[in-house]
Length: 288
Image (cartoon, rainbow, N blue to C red):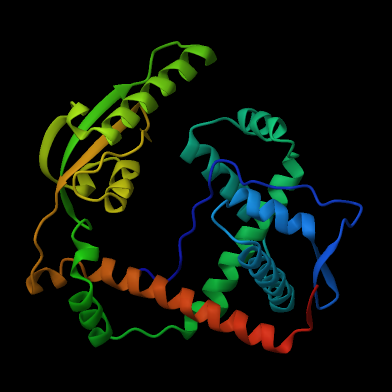
């Protein structure tokens, strides 16, 4: 069974260079300053987030950083190298291409590595400090399954239609960009009018038979919904979710690991929120 949280690193982690001149103080947390521009950057990156929510998140981030320092969570050179290699493999790009992408966003490679290191430390902290507090027994799993059967309908099988767009051979950058734009156009048209989707009906398929990227996208879809383009090893794939299996109590054993992982991640998140609330109660926080 899964006993640790597995984390994924996105292609490019958005970073904002810290301003040398403080442009206005939004909060002080244990002597460290959160500026108004920090809040503005967070709101800009997450448009649906209010300024109050953004500031709360930044306070929690600082408190978490303090906890990481106190816990002396180490990140080795090997940890960092594996994480970056994982980014390159997942996104099928070279290190040079990654550096070029970062440069285009005004981010240095050293800044990027520091952010990756911070994310690794966070995950290690959760696994070493928060995870051991989470206890899940057999009855917990059965109760959760009975209360949330719909949550697991897409865990093993799904009836899908699939459109596969193979990568063009020996294409230059402009041709690849045109190819991806075409894929996005097809997906947008199908999302606004599902009758416009002309994929191949695969019937009810086992998710293990699909590309991991495609399998991960299915649980996020509602029945009748068309996905955005999904990047796989040799093609871009667009899928439409047609139906999901009906589950019974007998499916519990087949889904045991998935139920455990889902409940574990939920309880870790709850435990982390409680931990941060305790840190808030002990900290000096001055909201301006």
